[in-house]
Image 1 (cartoon, rainbow, N blue to C red):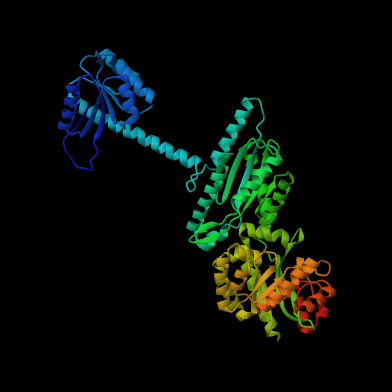
Image 2: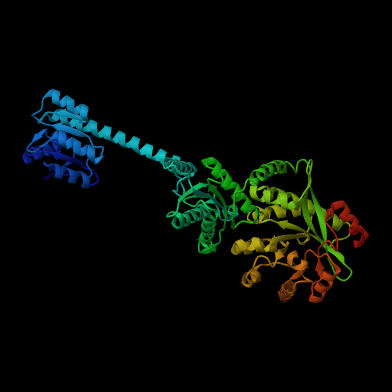
Length: 584
């Protein structure tokens, strides 16, 4: 039986009251009286245990009002049914046949209140009070759920967070101990490669959208195998129980790499993302949760230093390497102001006479205790922590000022080449940094040549084309460095507005002994000449290499055969002598 109170605004919600009563008239009168006292109600009557269970399963009730004694049913049984349902609904006994002592004991058992039948003046405030109490309890539960969600789930991806992953690993470990067996599992730490370029090129909202896509891929591919979590930033963790052997973990790591092979969609363009993965095995690489996460992260960092898009297993030597790396990073942060960094210049020569036509500016570090630190040790650190942007701006200013000195010496046709890292190339402020360096030095734009690696350009070719065009419009010369190693498509190469192609030294090194390298070099030279581009051969170390390159049509060379990188003053002496003999 249902009774609806009087008509009211369509947007005003009615109270849903479940009435436990064997008398239909009493339930009808109850609904009318509550409406008369200002409550908008919808009453539904049941009088058996099965009917009450069904009502609780199917309805959303604000309050239960129950008679005490009915044929085959009573308020005590009804209260127990409500408890068994797990629902937090106020329960009020509304009866004329119950002693005060029984009413009191019922309230101790969980009844919200007792009101004699017909006493509406008392019933209405009881209902209002209990509804407020239920709302307050719901608010507390909701707040608790929100706190629980904030504590254990990532707000962006909705994946479990680092704390949740730690709790899950600890729980699995405890469960294994209860069964008298050590936990066998693998922890995978994934970090997106060069993701800061996405944020700097497209903005953080676009970065977040791509992170959501990455999270969804990981969840779809790994959820049936293990526990997926977002650790923060562009890092994710995957815990896979039952994979305690290196072979099984390697299979899973390769599977995770394949998850990122397909492009990601962003505003009608396709972007390719790759990941670096670190793997720690349980129990071989630790049983403590934080030790496992630390070790897997160390292994991930090692994979990233090798160029990314790969995985590494943890080994104990990584801790020592990590400590040395942290110390080197701290020292590098102060290297500019301590004047430990300096710029070396390596000549690029052309023509039969070997005239110096340009020079490449190369960053060097003279550490106070370690001595000369090789660039391949500190440049990756700078790229990883973002210092490369500051270092890149510094070397650009220094190189532009030095090239201005060459012009003042009478070598006003020369330009200086400066390498631009993938991290720098992804920074919109690079354009302004270049303009400022040229203006401050008073150097014409063509006096600066920016060298960008082929692999950097192909990471996001569409954005690269736009950046290159901006520099071309400024008048800056552009070179593709390490050409032949990044697998450019010719379609994109035609669109890159570059001036120079630099043949990677790995091909030049085997030029005289390896026919495949020789064929690649010839093909690059022919391609460049057909596109009216200059070609520079890097890493030239012997006269035989020079002869082969000249025969194939290459006229610009850089390498130890023509001169090693030297400090600025020494390089000026070479220019003044107008002879390469001083460079040897």
